[in-house]
Length: 444
Image (cartoon, rainbow, N blue to C red; front, side, top):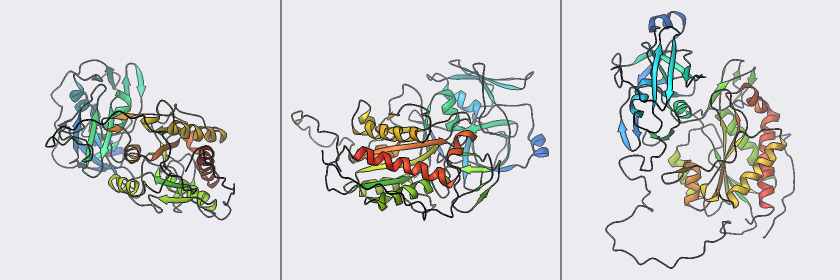
């Protein structure tokens, strides 16, 4: 194959010289769950400052059908709000599904008890609000004991009920959650469900069958082409997708010590850190490295701003004939205990090919940075192709793409690798080296 040598240069001395970096936040919007506890809202109010909980109007779809659990939008930090739902509502909705679970409250031990696989027994409180209108929410430590194991996730108490984020619950009980930013819809898919996300077909107009057209005689089957870029122009062009931004902080964590973000915002030990405060500086640093060595770079954002998924889709589609590959910069979160890096690749390469080889190039360089791997490269399939929107948008226009999750920002030890200028530079350098490694043996 054709190769192009790009001189190895490090121009970091003048890049981000006065910048500090913070952690990131993830998801666009999440949901919560409710279990009755013995504590009252008055007790919480006496000891903690409450937060306004607004009645959520977000549409929720479970396996293609709209459901209406009680949800509240709570502003949890300076960047934005998240949607929280009752645990009992979710358990009620999951009855009969492959991921059904029971919920009970042990008055003696004051514990929320859940058992996977068991049918949920209703107590009459499901799908109802205890009071009308907006409420006050109080942070609470209400772990769930699932099958005898303690699960600790972020929770709020509203009128004596415990609410959790939907994505957290998906991780715990084994169902998928995604969000449609433009239409403000939350999509829940349980294991084994293969239908559309909403009552309307999820197929794009270009792929949607047109039943008004007469049947067409199929073309003779052809041998698939090699999964390589469809142009060779001698100029490497990289599209960098900056995860989250602006009002969407992404994943969140807690600062293990004082530091300054790239926006010169001081974060004290114990303060909230957000994913977007890592994604942008790493992406900018990667951009400067690539451009300094002769490559062209297209950015989804170069400032801290919100970019919707529809806008990201347009950016990808409008640059498909120019870009050789797409790298989406993210950082992870889960339950405070997970650690390590993770690469998400397009499903067309799950059995080998460019996508897997690109992910392996990133893995090699991340290992050299002293990082550990959280899990093997992820190839996740949804109802319309790739499960992850960015990978799906790129696959639809034959653009090679990978999503990088370099560290878990809610893990104090894991996030320490990028709580400094040097750490951010090392992450960007590893990405840069991986891209050059890959294109030393692949055309562009």
